[in-house]
Image 1 (cartoon, rainbow, N blue to C red):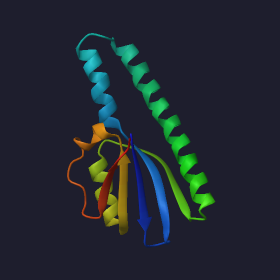
Image 2: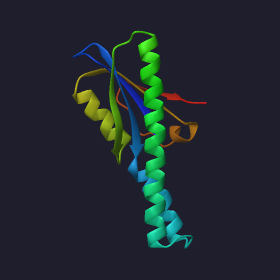
Image 3: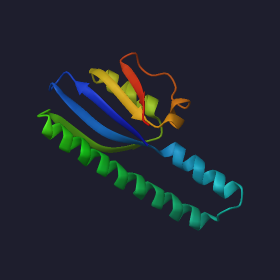
Image 4: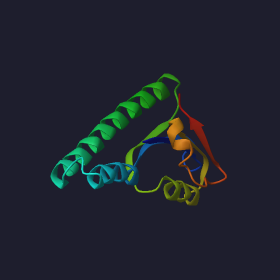
Length: 127
């Protein structure tokens, strides 16, 4: 799961969302099935459970961001949770929508998996 914040020229505000990479979850679930740890029905239930957990965590993060923005009197547009297979494709779509600056925050484990980011994007590792 990655957090993505971008600034938009259209409304002079910060847009915030949480990005869930479907491929990462599918890869983990697929490996469990291939190695024989779980059958197809438990795999499907585990996948749904993991996605539900990530969505709940994402909503908690967005509530915190919203609260902090309100404290600082920053205009904020929450884009909610975005579930897509590729973070990189999503970031390039934001560039096409005239984003000024894109900041992606995520865990240290994600750093090696991040491909080519647009020139206006910056990756911040979380602790």
